[in-house]
Length: 456
Image (cartoon, rainbow, N blue to C red; front, side):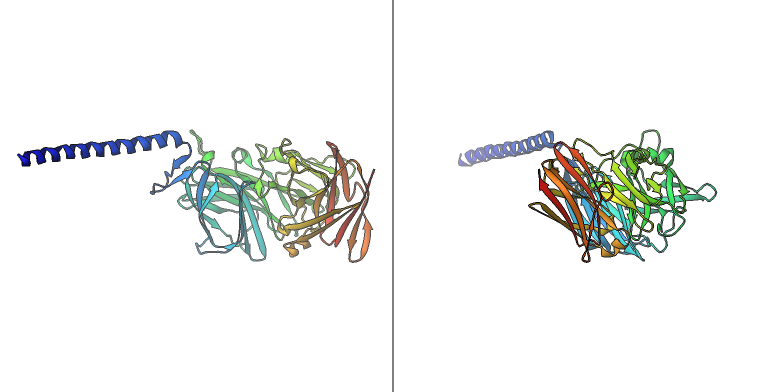
């Protein structure tokens, strides 16, 4: 009798336990399904890797090896990732591992090879995945202008194969890229490896295929030389056609002309969105000579070639709702880099008694200090890369004053010698929303810029 009762109790217990396990399994399934239905937009499974790793929506994980074309590790001098708000900078590295980044960021690579500090910057639009890249720190002693393209960065499983043809009679380079569909590959072409030696060349056409592409970037290196990078990525795939061929056309500029233009407009290291085509960008950079005559652009990059002299340059392709873009008084000279990084001023930062660095030759990396006191503003600047100042005489800044402040005089103090600056030559003044915008051209050799003011 006791055995029967115990057996029944055990049977009931087993049934209860079995039901409890079913309950647990059901609860777990409901929980997982609930999380999936509520948060599936926030978490996206990595489909390109064998792991079950998930990444928050809007972010990707990147791994980058900096290597030679032979696959050996190479030390990158500087590496920057930025979307304007998110910002990370590294120095003297051979790899980046497991870095979580916003999907849309600009990436700036600087490496030293031969006599060159070479800089290339591009914007990648990633897609909530893990990416493994090779970045090739090319041997600058072997890179040549125009006649040959180079793979600069690629996903490791892209299987990129590059073929090209140079037409000497037409100054045209045609190249084709074969890669695994959807994989990111960047191809760089030097327009001119030695701007300080004649002749010099500009890029005049990208061809129909390249014009339709996204992810184009123009760079300037040190000593002065210029290149263009074109990105292939998943965003460029179409349902009916894979774009894989590009034709670049170059043109020699007159020997008495010098390039002037804007490499990129950036906000805290992020390349600001540009017009749909590079020709639109060139046309929407306004360049006026000293007499106010507009210079027409016939180049994609660099945007203008002009005789030496004074010019006024304004980029009009940047969003006016968020930024203010001051005009800068550029002095173009032989053997000086007049291709600038341009830093538009955020409208919220456009306030009286402020100073803003607006333009510089990239490799100088200028650190500027401005001290405001009663009736006087003192400005001093120091370049991080002092050798780069051999190739660029000036940086450009803006002083913002209210309209009740009168600008009396601007003095430049250099090695004990004082010179007085001239309006509409060394600086210009514009009025906007009750503010005076004073745009200055400041020599790197300046010990102090002293701005004298008075209250009306």
